[in-house]
Image 1: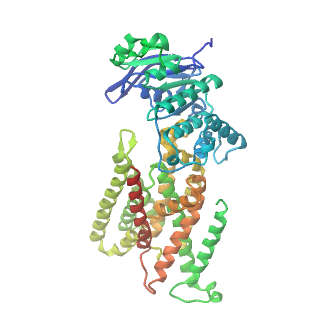
Image 2: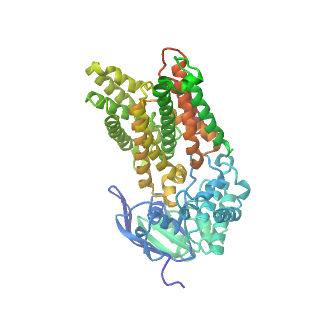
Image 3: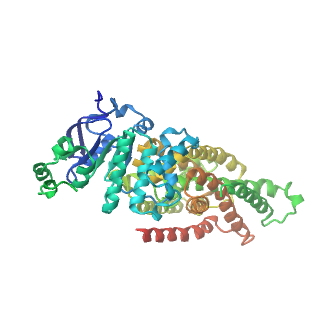
Length: 252
Length: 315
């Protein structure tokens, strides 16, 4: 096993005004792992994700990526370490799928420098991998939610970072597309050795695709470790307050 | 598509020549080059139009990316009006002969306006687009009221202040051209340097940051550069509305949303648009003149309403 974890979250406190959102979060994310970050709405999942991406400043504690505090990276350097895919993002201005994925190469380009052949080749490879190459000239409104989500994943891939964060990548998608996206992430995790952290709600999908689990409850880490040990009926009842029958059967 | 720029540049040069030949004083081509009407009136005026057009269009395109809103431009947000208030104060204070003085005052009050807009329209840490536009409109009203008060209190200077609120190139001088030129060149260069950052900002602030853009720093730098251009443009020509809305919008229809193309095209098309409006303004009702600001508004306001209508449908 590797000596130090890919991401190390140390005693993280985060509050919005007087409202404490995360308190004393400590977690290690191993290199090459695929983690589901789960918990009830408003338990601070997205906040934690944004802290890891240095989009939010925690009140206390630190996040280390590859052993280095993220605050010691420049914005460009950090963008070569961590990429992020948000919930369906939208803009007034219609860049094509290809132009969108090409933006992922930004942290490698100098000011005023145009895309190199290498950038183009990487973009093509990422778009082929995500099966979006045939949509490369399409605009967001011409594509379905699932197709656009794959474009966003291609953009994150083009950023070529060891760590990839996903915020509910399958929300607003039908069940077939949810599976398709999770298959894709699982494939990226295995074939390209990316460390992946996914905020998600669907217990079945998480159980099936993510070997590791980070469970947040009442602003704290409730459980971290292997999925099949963590996601027991007792835990589900305790954290989500429901009796979810799926674990009695072989999940899906 | 990509080869359009040289043709547009040619069109701009032809328009400049045509504009030079037109006007209340009729001159043959031979007389034109030596005539003081051309050298001291028309030529600086034409150059000022092109500079103002470039400055306003590039600023508009930047604002649309910074505020992530296709409906913003320096005029709609009240930044131009903010600059005109500073200019009016400078005139009242007796600085009317110093373009640098007027420009400096305009810059200060325009920056103050931006700061106010940011403070009012930011909810949490998000800039709310409807609130943004409403704030701009309200500030425009407030500033118009302040400028009217200044005019009533200083009736001796009313005429020069009215000039600023209506917008006109009739006072163009070589001094104005030479003051505006370095400001616009500097401002445009700063914005062009950040063309790719502007693309990423269009997608979203946080996304831009996670793709390596130092969002806060870039936004501040761009707001400063554009406000500098707007303030000095307003000092030279008064408030000319909607240029920053019309030009980038038309350019995007031609070349798509990529700011690395939108910005250079906006410089040229902005020059064409403002020069065309001003040439019409001074030739249609000879020997009288129309305020050029009302011509640009005649094109811009309907476009704004159309864009608003379309964005309403999209929601």
